[in-house]
Length: 354
Ligand SMILES: *Cc1c(COP(=O)(O)O)cnc(C)c1O
Image 1 (cartoon, protein in one colour):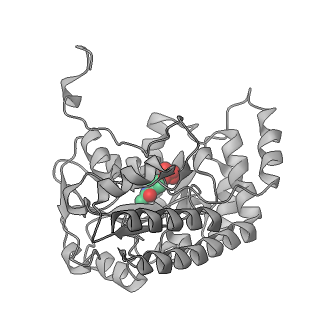
Image 2: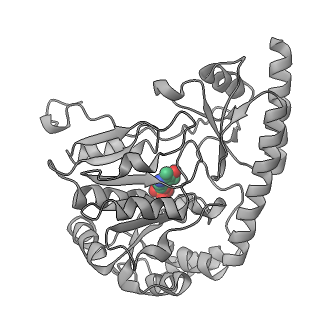
Image 3: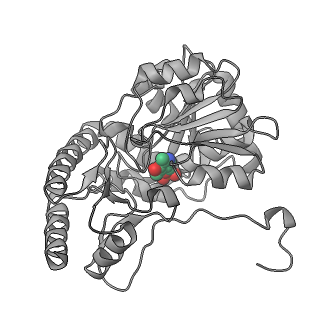
C-alpha cells in the first residue's frame, strides 16, 4: 500500500482468484472452468470483429441483447450485458445497497459478495447455511436488505427449487432479490421466467461456465425494465463500452451453437456423477452438487493437506481458508480422463496413508 491510498480502502480485502501457477503443467480443477473448449466456429466470429477494433463496441450491445432476448423469450429491455457476471453483481451492490439497506447473503457462498460490499462501503449480513449446507428459505423472509443468493450455491453446489426462490421473493416485496445463476446450466432450474412476475427479482448469469467463455468475460442480468435501467445507470457511469466487440461476437456465436454447449453441460453432469460415485467409494462425503464442481471432505485427511498433496502431484483443487469449510475442498469437473487421474491419485494417496 502506498501512502497515497485513500483511507476509505485501508481495510479492503480483495477477492483472491484461484491460483494459476506456471511452474509445471497442472490438471486445473480449481476455478470451475468448463472442461471443453468453445465451438470451433467461435474463432471466425471473433476474428471478423478483430478487424474492426478501431471502432468502439456498441454501448448497448443491441445485436447480442436481441439474440439473447430471443433465446430467453424476454425483451431486450429486460437484459443488461456485462463484463463477466461479476460486473453486473457489482452494479447490483452499487445500485441496491446502502447504509440502510445492507446486503444479505449466506455465510458460505461466493467469496466475491463480501468484497463487493466492502468496496462499495455497504454493510452486509451473513446468514449461516443449515448444517446440511442448504440455504434455509425462511431465514431470508423479511430480510430488510438486498438478498444475494447463488443458485446453485458455491462452493456447496446445492440449489434452491424455483418454488423456494418464489417464497423468498414473495416474503420480500420491499427488497431486491438477486439470484446468481452462474451454474444453473448444470442441472438446476432457472428463475429467468419469473422476472415478469416479480419486479424485485434480478437474475445474473454468465457465459463463463456453461459456454466455455471464462476468458471472454461475458455475463448479464435479467430483470424488469426498471431494475435494468438502474443497473444501466451504474454501467453508463463507469464504462458504457463494458462488452468489447470480440466478446459480443463470441456471445452471439455461443447462442447460435447452443446445442453444442448444452451437450457439453450434459456431458459434465455425467462426469460429475461418475466422479461423485468414485469419491464416495474412497470414503469421501459430498454434497448433492448441481454445479460443475464437487464439494468434498474425507474423514482421514484435512482439507488443506489434501489440497497440498494433490498440488505436489500436479492436480490443483480449491481449498478455502474460511473456518467453517476448512475440512472441505471444491473440485471442478474436468474431462473424464482428468477425473480418472484425480481418482487414481487419491486412491494411491489414501493407501499410502492407511
Ligand atoms: C464464476 C462465478 C461468477 C462470475 O463469473 P464471471 O466469470 O465473472 O461471469 C459469479 N457467481 C458465482 C457464484 C461464480 O462462481
